[in-house]
Image (tube, rainbow, N blue to C red; front, side, top):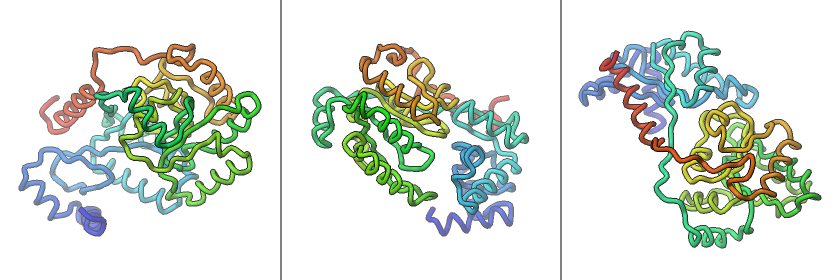
Length: 322
């Protein structure tokens, strides 16, 4: 569905209670449960529906949202809640926030933690080939994320500045989209910070790279670095878990829920704390070092668990389970 048709359908759903054409299509295809991802099909849809709230960032960090963007998301959430949707969330942290901000969702929230498959861990030759492609050093931390303000790249620059004398050889390699739709000047602030601190060699910018290169870059580093101020359920942490890559993570409750026991955590507001964490990890590159341990082996397949949990939710919403 293109943008214009999607918006027209949403308007009809809000005004009429449902979009007749969409409702007819669902009925013709005998749809049992509808999954709403950033879309609302109306309170008169007549078919059980699951609304996925990827996170509650607009409530936790409202200052990062322009007013129109904040209200667009807020009205969408409120409409889905008022329509009696089952609410799917990615973490217990998100569930607690959802029920705190929207008490009417209590008893209707369901935590389904997504996972990524771990079918192939790049071998030494693959890692070396990609490392040479991007002219990466033998040792580095890898920070894969969009250059959005809440991803906290500026704290990394502060931490590297603090480390210049003790560990001038520490390098952070960053990849990801360099445009923040809400804060268009953010990437320029990152560039200015790097230039002012003379850190362009210590903070390498790769931009957007092919997805197939992410795993080799991740495996080739000392650890994954995620300094974020907010996450719903981090895809990069899941990828590091699947690839058994050590991690240095901000002390978000959701990060601890996702990686407690297999990561080193630091105060997300403190450049000194991040500098200490990076310095300690740099001295102890082994995944078995104190504070960074290998991902424990488990007989449970996280992808299969995610699939089973999602199927259980769909069946519950469809009325096939009590």
